[in-house]
Image (cartoon, rainbow, N blue to C red; front, side, top):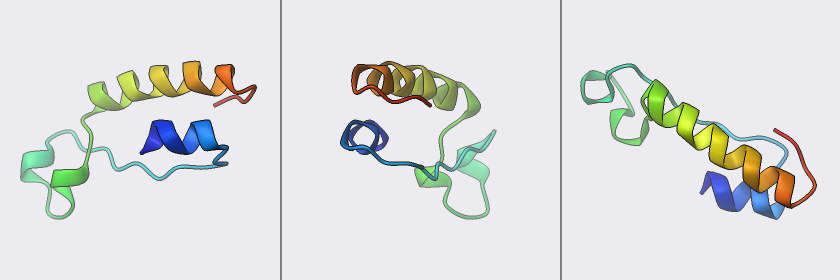
Length: 55
């Protein structure tokens, strides 16, 4: 969804990040680990550049 949102021109995203999503008190199933978040951000930066935006 993040990638599609950036490609469509979103001005912001809300992403939950947790060091140990399996043991998060809430929303663990939808949380990214810090490593996953870093990888996602790399991908988003490439997509943003392709649509003349920046992250």
